[in-house]
Length: 153
Ligand code: SF4
Image (cartoon, rainbow, N blue to C red; front, side, top):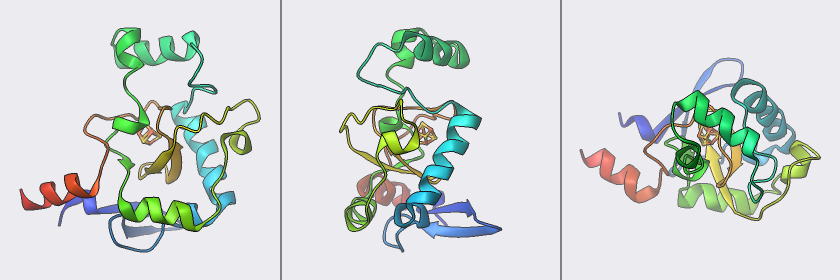
């Protein structure tokens, strides 16, 4: 079975979820759950920065040290190109269908950059394309085309 088609979510047990043509993920339907999962991601993996449009030198310096890369390189390692970032047609439709959280609802210091976002299968959150976290991995974004291609391999 193609690993990228299914993810495991922990909601009192393990459940597999299809992010290509399945049901909308629960955190997209439930703002409270989405916000709670964001707080877990912030606590466990330093999700941020608060304002991606600002320099946020301290934040990016910490990521550079964490990843062992220069700061300029760390600044390119974003949710938008993380392998956990699902930007599929289904996710975009789900996000339109239900009222979505705004960054200030996650934390009053967080700025809404209007950068757009998609769904993170690692923390089960909707995340802004221009933010990142310690769990970033190369290979994203996961799009319908990329997932279909991987399925053929
Ligand atoms: S795991 Fe990837 S997509 Fe999820 S919050 Fe972290 S950087 Fe963003």
